[in-house]
Length: 405
Ligand SMILES: Nc1ncnc2c1ncn2[C@@H]1O[C@H](COP(=O)(O)OP(=O)(O)OP(=O)(O)O)[C@@H](O)[C@H]1O
Ligand SMILES: [Mg+2]
Image 1 (cartoon, rainbow, N blue to C red):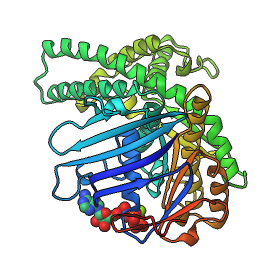
Image 2: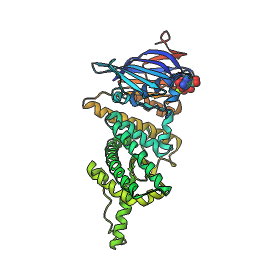
Image 3: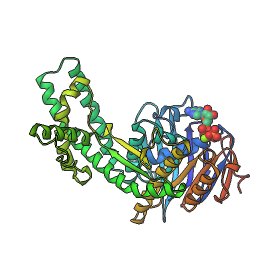
Image 4: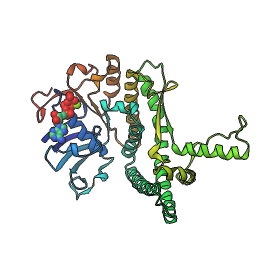
């Protein structure tokens, strides 16, 4: 797919800006602070309803305004779709598809698909686990928009369950609370199982692409992989070990039964396992006043060779891992495109300046064949020659059409 038009109103630094874009490579060059990332952020937001820079909407609204608009024309094969997204300071965001009646913002998900590379991606490796969970969930929603509801159901139940556990901690926990907690356990087990099931499947799909992308970007001396560490697995393993030791079999070497592979379980089976795990964790959860088991505490561990990337990888390796994760998402989406979808738009915001010459060239060679690639740079020399295509200058307020070549 590709974006043919982008128009922003009161978004970040722009009162109004209108851009025409084309398939193929477009490199946007302009000085620091001119508004290049703001443009890319708007496209990413339209695709995911998240900014890659901030976690709330407020900074997206131009100073002093209450409402921002992102409008875009997305072309997918023969079909063009006009998307409009209204970001509001004091009420729910809304969308429109082909000038229809307003719909929930969430209904726009999946129509414009992007893979965005940015310097902030370093947090995928170096940051806390929430960065990696967000990476998985965002990709999940892009591929299967119905999982936006899975996520928000889970978040809602988690919040309510935590509030209840917290009240238990303050000593006001009664038998009535206990019964209510049982009900929340059921809800959270179901929503958690759906999310976990989808994430595990996604990690399996990402895995081979991550390995290949890392090999392509580097000299291939180390292998990249990702392991999903579930808090459910931990507690089931602990529980299993405890049961075995009670039975007197856990102490003999080799007597332990192998850990259950969660990837082989259905949503229903995972739901049961969660209920089991919540029961095992209840006392600890009541003591701590928070939910300790569930996808909200899981980790996607990134591994380079035999060591975790976090804390061990060099700066260059960290970058290669981040790029490989984004490339892997792109390839997973491409696999989907082969079965009826459309290749996502690639956005590379400020990444070339961060890379050495070798990696620049390799990345450029990999991405240049995508249907649409939007690249930003403050210095044109940072863009490798392999990335041929349209070069445009970003000036205050938009693109300099005169300078287009
Ligand atoms: N909500 C906002 N309202 C008005 N201006 C904003 C808002 N948010 C950011 N800006 C302005 O937008 C500018 C930053 O734009 P942007 O990050 O797109 O720059 P850039 O061209 O990507 O620069 P660099 O090359 O340094 O990455 C800053 O000058 C900032 O003050
Ligand atoms: Mg920028």
